[in-house]
Image 1 (cartoon, rainbow, N blue to C red):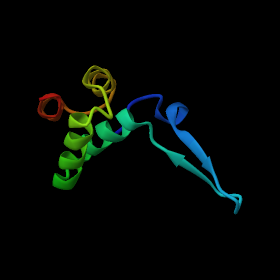
Image 2: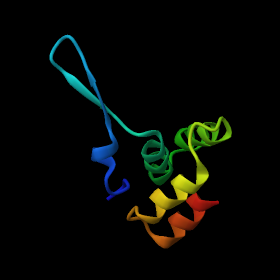
Image 3: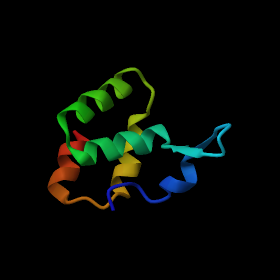
Image 4: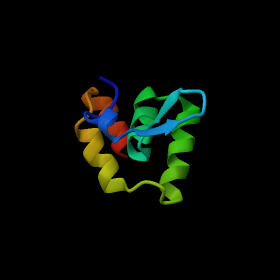
Length: 79
């Protein structure tokens, strides 16, 4: 699992006039998912969200602790 448990319950739904419903990640879940993916562009985007205080580091660490990822990658993300 590359995302924190409970993510679907925290997703916001966005209805549209065409009877399509979009799901948007809760910001902390999005940042953790991006860090776990490990792409350069995702890391810089996530770092900006932290600097701009759009997400809170203690919540990110709690979500990371509940995300299935190997110990080496977890340590890199937590820095």
